Image (cartoon, rainbow, N blue to C red):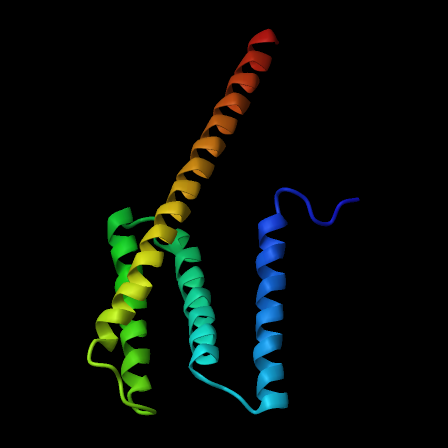
Length: 147
């Protein structure tokens, strides 16, 4: 039995990479007593990725609303959290004069790419499910007609 196959290969790669990266950060903190900007940025990117993935995964709860409203609501919630985190970062150090703009772009561009991929995949799944339902109904109707 294959545990890693073509369907989960990239998921496994991403999980292994994440575990190795966090192990490296933890090891640097313990052995070298180093926790700098790049470690903070990596943890922040992971946290924002986790949050964005969770928010996107909840789209099914809002199926009664128009898709554009759901997408915009998800984005506004997430960019609000990003700006809040940026603002809170100012408590611990001085922010660059373009920190908010940089965070806006750093989050928005990958998020837009991600939602396009995500919702194309959702529409593809829905289309596949509808085709399967249509085939089942046709098969059932043929079977009922033979009786």
